Length: 114
Image 1 (cartoon, rainbow, N blue to C red):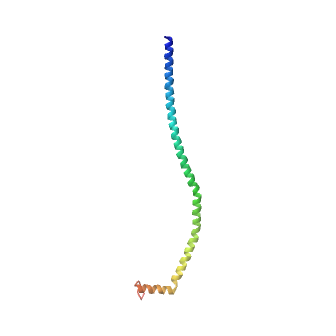
Image 2 (image 1 turned 90 degrees about the vertical axis):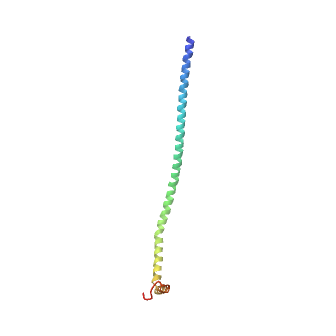
Image 3 (image 1 turned 45 degrees about the vertical axis):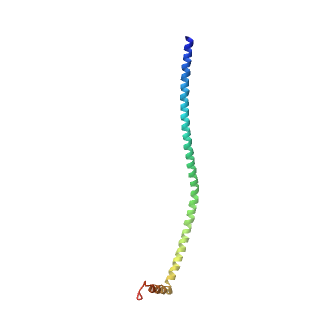
């Protein structure tokens, strides 16, 4: 009798150890899934950070290009002003004004008196 009670006790202990091991296995499996998810999130964050770094790397080049364009703006404006002044000088020429007026009269845009 005593021998069978010992075996029953050992069987209960072994059964309990098996349940504890099974529970530990489920916890470890859940931890593995969480770690896998965390790894995927970290990988995505790394890709986003890499893309942001590439964009930040391009920013000085873009700013430099914008500065060069802004530096050219006064020269372009000055050139446009000179062209406008030349055009005004041409249209102020009495001969050009007379030809323009004759063309207007001939085409019927103006009256001969005015």
